[in-house]
Length: 230
Image (cartoon, rainbow, N blue to C red; front, side, top):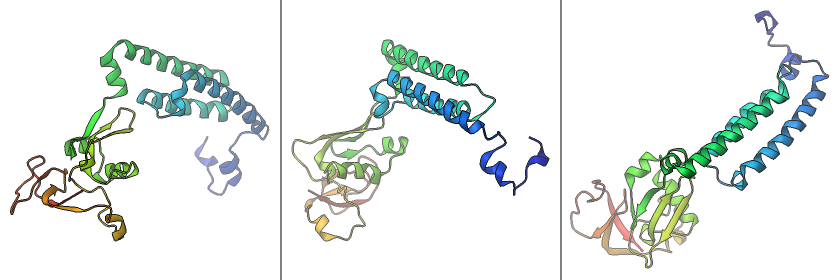
């Protein structure tokens, strides 16, 4: 396209492009064929494509999206090339999965590893920062699973797929509240009670016996204390 062909008031070109009207029928035909092969490819990739995707599966999906668009819309691009590229992406995914199955190091590199975010009711603040997860994001997940106090939680794992796995304590202990701090509805906070014998670090949830001046937290070195709740 020449520079002189670009006119800001050329709505026919902006809306419909420069292809002849008959090409719209071809787009319908191209889309039907590509859609059929996409369904076949999704079926071959397996049931996990309907669930939480791994890194390699997400890569295949993004690659497929980039492949499909020109094959459906560009009049100078053939469908066969797009289908061939989709088959290549499928083969790459199958080969990397097989390679990871035979080599654990490759599997960890391709799929990622599990990370501990909460251990015995205490946050691993460093892991939260490395995984770019805020306190309130994690607390939202815990509240959704009806954990309103970190003392109720034995472990929280961030799985390689991005999902959270939560394992409860056998018996709840005093800890840091997971309720939103700015909620003024007292009926919500009424489900908890303060345990005045303990104080809790508001940064990591470390619970210690109450003292006049607790000093910095022994776990995260931050001096920000509040009353533990149960």
